[in-house]
Image (cartoon, rainbow, N blue to C red; front, top):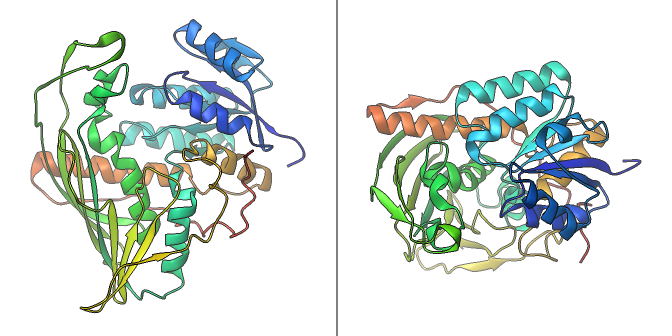
Length: 371
C-alpha cells in the first residue's frame, strides 16, 4: 500500500479502546474519525487515542476522507450501519456477528458486491499465531484426515464484568451469537464449510442481575437460550459438537479439539490470538506435547483485536478478498442461525451457504504492530 487506509470507527464502547490501540500501532491503517450515539464517548476516545475528529454517525459516513468503516456497535445495529456505510461508498469491517438474520447478511453481501467494496467480519482471532499454526499443521497432513472436533464455550456470563450486560441476553447475542462466533469461525477455518446441523437449547435463568458499573443491581429479562448445543456436519464428512453457555463456568473441559486419523490437535482458546497448540498421537500410551508456534506476528500483545482490520486493509491494497471475509462471516451466521432453528423445531437443518477456506498466512506475515 502506498499510504495507510483511512479508518472511521462507529461505536466507542468497551471494545473500541483495544481496536484503536492496535490500529494506531499499524502502518497499514490510520484512524481519522470516530462516532458514537453518545457523543461524549466519541470525544473521550478521540482524546485518548489522538483521533482528529469525533463526530456523529451521519457526519462520519459523509466524511470523504474515511475509506473503511469499523463497526463496533451492538449486534442489532450491525446490519443498518454496515448497509449505510456501503451506501456511502465505504469498505466495512464489522464486529461479530455479521448480522442478526440471514436476510440482513445477504443484503450486506449483495450491496458490497454491487458497489465493488470489501466487507470483512470479526472474529479475527483465527488470524493469530495459535490458530494459524493449527491450520498449517492440519494442512501439512501430519495428523492425517480430519475426522471431527469439539468446542466448549462455557462461561458464567458477562454481568460481572461488562458495564451494560443486558444486550448480551437479547436476540442477536446470547452465548451462541456472542462467544459462539469465535468457536464456529475456528471450526470452519479448520474443518471447512458446514453441510447441516442439529441443535438444542434452553434458557437456564429467566433473569440476570448486573454486578458492576452504572447498572449494578439492575435485573433484566433473558430472552435467548443460555445453554445451546450444536451437532455440526461438515461438507468433508467431519462432525463436531459445540456447547455454549452463559451460566455454566469453572469446568475442566478443553476449549477445542480436532480429531484426526493420526492424532488429536488441542486448539488454543478461540477467543485469543496465541497458544498453546498441543498434539497427542493416536496411540493408547501417547502423551500430549506442545507444538511451537510457527508465527511471531501476535507476540507483542495478548489482545490483538483489530488484526482483521489491518489484514483487510492489506487485502484491499492487494485487490484480494480478506481472510476474515464477509462470506466467512455470513457462513458462520448461517450455521448459528441454523442451530437456533433446529433447536426450536427439533429437526435437522441444512446449511445452504458456502465459502472458501483461505490459505494460511505467510509464516513471515507482515501484519506488524508496534511492540
